[in-house]
Length: 141
Image 1 (cartoon, helix red, strand yellow):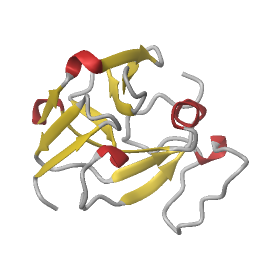
Image 2 (spheres, one colour):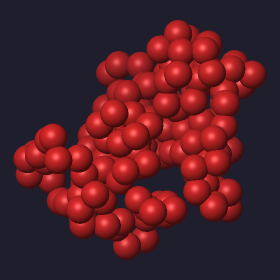
Image 3 (cartoon, one colour):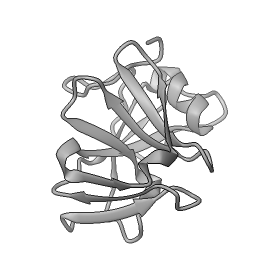
Image 4 (cartoon, helix red, strand yellow):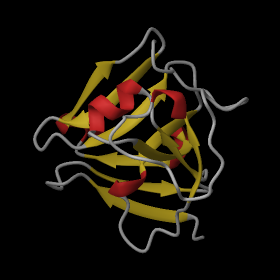
């Protein structure tokens, strides 16, 4: 996978470039992620220092839990980012990246909280709650 990636929201008001290694994609099925996206949140992450954003004035931040925020485009509504206050990394929605992205989903988290209208049948690891070592807010935070 290349060490540089670009992407944007649906309307193009927010564009970004990442440098450095991206984490594998994590699919989160918690109720917060489902309510924000309509299905589940599929995101990678990168060190904050390796993310350059154009159009930051179009980003609105929502305090989603006691320790994390979700960023979205205030023009088109695209879900963009999830970031814990103390984290050195920022999660970026995988669907925002220009193709080919080279990204792949590695596993699913909060499967016990997934919607009742779909099944997860891709054969990848599934965790009832979060995965040890992965910073998340969880369904009740």
